[in-house]
Length: 273
Image (cartoon, rainbow, N blue to C red):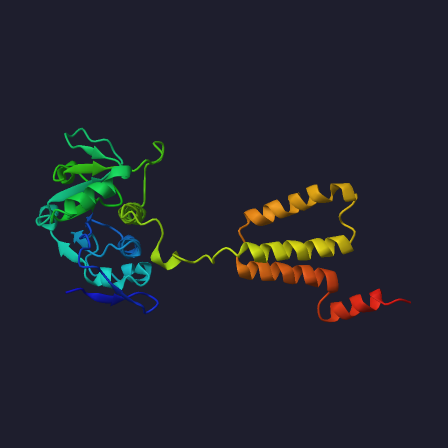
């Protein structure tokens, strides 16, 4: 049975029955509660919900994590603590080690372009996956890395490879979400209005031409067709919606006749003396 939850706007969000089980985030010996909280926030931003902590330096729960979690309370409250890395990964079948350092170990390396696809393919077989992140000061030890199936490394600046723990989790969380193949979040689908009917655009052009003629814009007359084309081409490329066309025509009318008090003054100026 699906577990139904609500998002920050109070809308009901439910996972489909065939949803891929997301990877577990495992922080090994994390030092700062603030980084743990920020990692929780990053995880929930991109749909990751299971956090495991291996012997956090300052214990757990840690009040310093709360403010940085910024509402990701469910991730923080459900985080599980383990005394060792081996126990934290005991139920997982495919594990990654996040590190920027080259290791003299016989462990394959996977790039950011393939990691999401690999994790989803593994999870689709019913196997649980996870990724290890090391402590802020020194990162993962070789003893942790050899427990993993592959190393994940980011294309960071070789001259400055130090990445904040929460930021590292954030990058991975994004890679996981982006690998879903969804080009645009559902919230933004259909956000743009339909393009206005060409008839509306043609009438707007006629309206604009009338006012430009009245203003003496088309001069010399021999260049009128070329000038019209130069005006109409960019307006056509804009693919204006029906509302935008109405607004544009309102602008033309206001410029030509004035509006409100400005219209009264315009009429007064146009009266014969």
